Length: 572
Image (tube, rainbow, N blue to C red):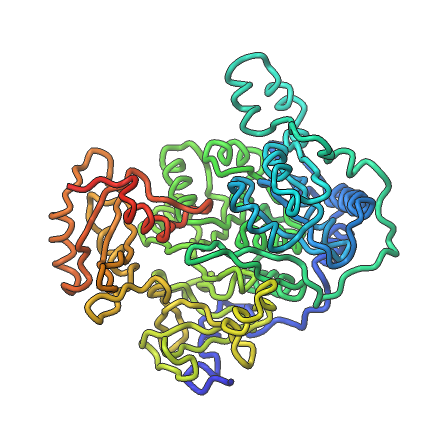
């Protein structure tokens, strides 16, 4: 299945920033080879910073080798799955590459998941070894016996903090106890292994078998915003290619001299690639934050000013507002790339006024390792779009009801992607893999887009989240943008609520600005001035806070569930 439409010649390459190639070289090294190369080249350069404590690339390489040996002593072999359940911390980086060094497979998990959420994923991947944040160790240990891993390694991330900060956490005062309780807890469950014991032995011999580029590197579970999470199979080739594409996309990066800020969770596909692989591939300094906090970022910036900041719109908004009040200097950030959700133009303006640099939006998904499109970092960028395909990436736009029929420029259709970053399929789900991956290596994204003549992509909405009312299709994103243009509305989520006759009703949940009064009639009148009648929400409720994922994306499915159950909502 080859494209026959207007994008066969990749017209978007004319918009690339100077020096960006049309394609990337063939991938010949694994993620293990990649990090080893950085260790050799930048041995004395700082690799990681955590609350001011520093780890050089030479130290990182040594710790990876010792952790890999410790995992081998636990019986980990090539192909085995090893679960990581941690926030951002140095041990997370070490564990990630140690698992890969053995040819084993990393499975990333959100450490704030409930027992039910963790149980589903552990049942699916069957990991027998889990490296977990000590605050989460008991949750994993209490999984049912047929799901619980044989070995649980608990990580105390405060052990990586400087001595002074560790001592301050031990002070016998309420504030210190509260801060310590947020960062660490002694597991109650028996048989849990301390991380320090795992890494306390000999290093892994250099002759130990290494993975190949086509071996599975990670299982990355999808967010599940539209259904049950599935494990996306990503190979070393997929992830290394995406890091190479990122490197090619950003002209002017200085090998061994950049400072990346890890404010995105490493267990999320976006944070994983931009920080765990891309940053490490160029010998960058990675400053880690266990959670995003503008005050922590401001403190870190005094000693290690950031130059590259991948983030999401709420992060940029918070830092730009802090900068406007003089609480932080972000003028050193040369490159800022936003993803995971729509980037408001107001956020772009606010950030660029604060930094003097560019903030560009990209597009990706777990199944594309994750980045597939990006706005050029230069004058050809086009705010309001998610940019153009990365080097080596092809696109097609097809009819929603027929992926074999292409549509033309400006017409809405489903986006298909093909490139070296496209995943190998879903773990143990051949039917869903076949539905997602079409002949020729084309991935069905499930996103409705329009594409300009020169290849700039604008996301309209998700196919599964389209609302069908009165025979018409309503894109939630369009209605949300209209509501958010009202001065009283901070954020909006639009969903379809099922009627008894099987049709759907357009409904909206909104967050109201402080000091403003919620008036659903006024909001409906506002929508009526900008939207066709069938798109106007028939029901509008107020929520004090819309449910969001850890990276700040509004979870429409949870909004729908709450509205259906009448929870957390106020109506007039």
